Length: 452
Image (cartoon, rainbow, N blue to C red):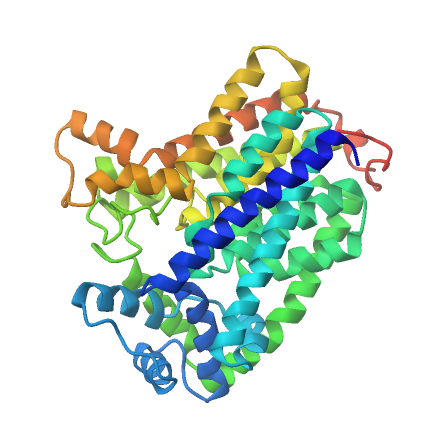
């Protein structure tokens, strides 16, 4: 290991220590500590005790039967009811949490935190090693900033920490042609946990063709193998779970509720906010009939452009990193995602390193956009940014106030959109279009000797 690599490992471990210690403190002192993990842990407990986790009354009954009580503060109690008892996790997430639910709460949540620490640190290390040969300092800086800013994700125990990290490991395995079987398993578990986080990354490998399509199909088969027993288990205990899950999603996204992307949302002025494009567009017109179709249209056009370019171009690992850099921020924009899911941005760092090593003006634009996206979705920065505005309520009025709201309170969706557009432009420019006859026979992946 070189001196630069040793230094990188030390900084990554230091960043991991920051989020572990600070996040652990928040978990131990907050009424909402490990709230997201409780949602899957006690959801699995409900099923084991033959209760319907998608019925808030059943969930609350099981939760209280294990010795927990709601906070006395009515606002905090409402947050717990909305965020915990209204189950929005898929059956696969509950199945994967079942081994933890077999343990008492104490060791179960400590084991979950240890797993999160290990997998998030390991995935960050893999990405830095991928980028290190091209831009060691710039890539290390962004990796460490991103890793040191997952305190809320860690304190809440959100499954995005596991799913995103497993997706990162899988991408590395596929593109590096190493431990491919482990990569298939990692992406399958991630896809089963959070399909709305990992789905577009998986779709890219389907479109890339050759050995990558084969791996993506293996992922799909393994995901189906995980999904079938989960659905059978949940359907046995809660036959109406699909209708109940849909009702819970609708209730949570209702006007002024916890997951509402609009400016009257319960969490609009807090750091743990919705980062999808709807939360930006809703500032200008708080109407789902406007901001949902507009988000789908913008993201759909970008997705179709990237898909067309992928199908019409020859695969290379360099271009693959540019494609994934466009997909990562795009993945969280069209539908409901919170700041935790935006940790997918770590997949944009190898593409930045490639541009940085080439020199030229585009590397500074790439650095500016990457830094803006990472900082606008960073836990510490977002907390400091939103604290002065927590007393505000209601919709902004006037064009100037709306623009200031976007720039100060809601910069993340705009930064994510700009970053995705930039890397889509880079990918579009660099992925050479070839004739269909050349594209179709693409049966094998790029040789392992090809470097980024």
